[in-house]
Length: 601
Image (cartoon, rainbow, N blue to C red; front, side, top):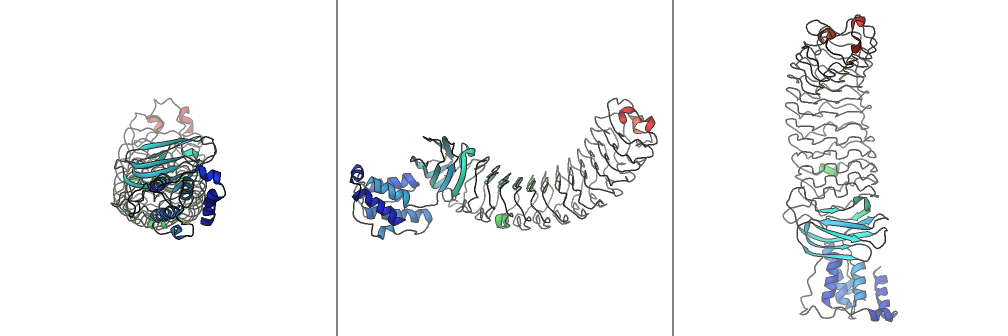
């Protein structure tokens, strides 16, 4: 390669005299300026030189190339300055430009645009010296740039694919919250990436790191694999949202996630560090590498792994048990929210030790939707949430296992054993919805620690379409107080094997009705009778949807219809309801069916 390039340079001098004549001899300063413009690095002049305006020869030019390669790569990679071509012949503009462009090889970052790209902009929020080669012969030299955001725009003469090269070194980053170190004006124009960003935006000597939030977010035309060395040079602690939405919606990315992609990040982490990093990267394949995060030692933070792999439908294999092994501390808001949601080809059992380091009081949505709609198999490990101790939190286990029809075995009675206290809004909303492969018996002690005042949506659709065939006595015995909106909406809906309701299931709940409190609760089940003491005592102040379709489509239902706690039929308590309730729709075998008002059936 080097011989061919040097032969080409000599040809310019010897074989094509007309071209050589058009070139101009260069001085030392010119060589250094071209190097800075092309590669964004400043090299000191030779200390033996007293005047940078003296003419440069080929030996000086090739020696500078060697020094530049050493600076860019951190070690000596070339020795052109001692080759046969390192003569005292004068260097001209053509030779200098050719040598700097072709012989200097450093860890730059390369971005190839889509064929229809007419303009492109790059915003850098970092101090330093940089260079942008737009790939069409035009270059941008950025010398001693301050930290403040600066946008560099370019219009291509012809709309076609161009490879843009960014080089240089950052020397300072903004300390403002959530400022993006690097961004592009049109991510849909990005077709391919390669090279190393960590060499351009490295970890500073004081440990400060850049922030690549949303760097390739919505780059829907980005193809190829993720470069394994993309963040080489970045080490230590992470910044807030450092890799948040990094490849979000990059559905055309292919290949496996590089195990060493974040190898330099050892912790501690910060809020949202990996939030939605690979969200909807449906073209990625292979297993999630256990090393991806397992090298990290950190305390917990909010939305830390929120939706990290959500929608990665091409990922396969099992979830590594050591993936989060170094993350330790109290639960934080939405920390693992939907982390693996819709990863439909992830299989195998859930590792019991996956969250072993998470210990303490619950927080909002910590495990909401975490495993929803995956391809997981096997049983749910009883120790999965053993470190969670304290009062329930809002949406804590909402949709956690939803849609996993291939899960089997029993629901462990100790799964939520650490929860102690009053229900929180939507705490178990849709937790096991559509988990029809699970054993059909609900453990009697599953909610043993849940006691106190009902909360909105607390058991909304919890066991909807979950293959339930029996409900244990006293499942909700310690939940007592005024009704809450949606509290048991569709809780046991669509469980055709369920044929018995235990006495007093909701007997502790009395007072003024709430919106949709029991709508669809037993819809499409095979229950044969309604216990007289199923409900507590409700006042005659109706609420919208309070008993809508509660016992609808229960065609095996016989005996009397549901009664209030005072012994009256529900329709005798709420005589002023005129809207259609459909409470007993398609349940014609009740003994008092003929007396039930039409809007209740």
